[in-house]
Amino acid sequence: MTSTIKTALAGRMEEVENRIAAACARSGRKREEVNIIAVTKYVSLETAEAAHQLGLQHLGENRWQDAKEKWEAISGSESSENGGQAVWHFIGSLQTNKVKDVIGKFTYIHSIDRLSLAQAIDKRASQLGLTVPCFVQVNVSGEQSKHGLELEQLPALLTELKELSSLRIIGLMTMAPYETEAEETRPVFRALRELRDEMNERAILPESMTELSMGMSGDFEVAIEEGATWIRLGTILIGKEG
Ligand SMILES: *Cc1c(COP(=O)(O)O)cnc(C)c1O
Image (cartoon, protein in one colour):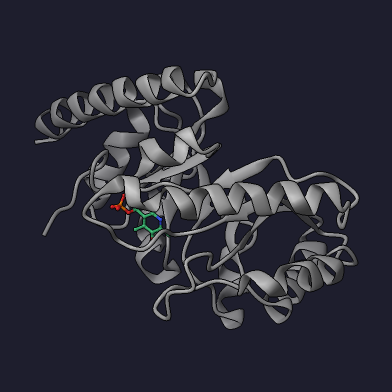
């Protein structure tokens, strides 16, 4: 069973890798600038373990309840492919009362969208003696259904986040609306990059934001062309079961 899973996964990894390389080549970017987060939320523990063993080091989940079993099984183990320990990314919207479960287990938080959440993370992180690298999630498309902060609210939030010493804001994150043509997501990704550059120019934070978390199964190539440094891939890379 596991070997069948691994064969299928390895095939998808190779195909995705080729597409990433091509998108980097088209946009004059280096392959090392783009990191893959393997999103395991649609698959079993067995498949998630196989992905980690095959060398996918960065794993993403969007709900602690669903991630718990995988986190407990995988976090202590080493990848047979590259010997690396898993690094966990929390990519879903985070309730303040779940912060205590997540901080200390997930290294990166991609979904800062309000001050109260950031304060709760900061408090927990400082209790644990950690500094948490975070992304602020922005609702660039303005779609009602999308999580994230309104664009106009970003400067004010960043100004407040500056005071939280256990948070390090490393970049911005967004989800593009679902489009049948990936090309239609380009303005959203471009806007996120421009927003990041503008915030850096205004030097609202003491350190420039270097990262952009954007691009999923349907639109990762466009996101790479627009400057993504972290792409979050579920279906196309890890698959979707059940
Ligand atoms: C589920 C999820 C993904 C991965 O989605 P796919 O389209 O399956 O690649 C990426 N980002 C976030 C925030 C998600 O919730």
